[in-house]
Length: 304
Image (cartoon, one colour):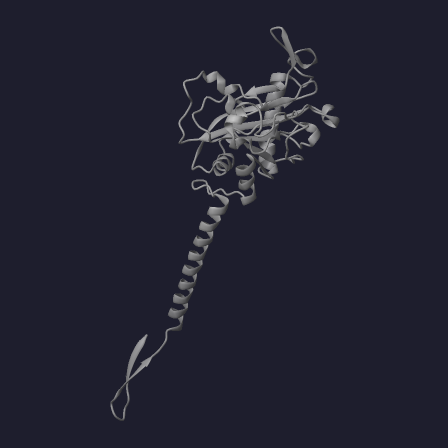
């Protein structure tokens, strides 16, 4: 505030500037807030570069998780689901599995075997396709911002689309799941494909977790030949590969569509329990085109 005062002796005008303290305080505070907001914006932009924040879902991942996925073709997200979120869907999925396959023993033939013409082999698991179509809580999980955002961030894309989901129940009598890649049987015109594997209970090494051949997602032509680059022979899952066990309630693993993976049979104490039930959901980049003209039945022929 500026005021002009007249002196009585020489009538000279003396200018006195009175500082309005309250006004300056507000101005200073506003400048500080502006500077803070600019700093936050700069930090957020830098954070986005290193953690790949999903632009629409405001979801971020740790840089080491992103690096693991990009380098190895698989990664683990610890505590992805809270206990309450896990409990809301796990009970429904166990119920679906029990209703279709029963709780007593393997359902695909005596001693876990099934006929394939003259060839008989041990079955690998019991399976339920598209459980999201059977219960709304499962659909909420498959289409949740948490799963969609994580899938998009790991793939480094703006948005993803659900390809399908499946329940895999490995029990006593089931054999190992052989090495394979999901994109072998997915009728999609894209390489940007990812699967989440969520065990519905604590999973130790004896509970047949997924095993991965790290780096195979970078060499699809070699992956299709069932051999990792530079190696002529690889042992079965469990004797070769790497895993992320132990997995606690709410932990999940993620793997690229070209990553070779599989799982051994149950062992140790895992044989005596109800088995290992895992929920999987697969996603692909929404900008990469949809299903090819191949038989849509191929989309349900995944082996995990």
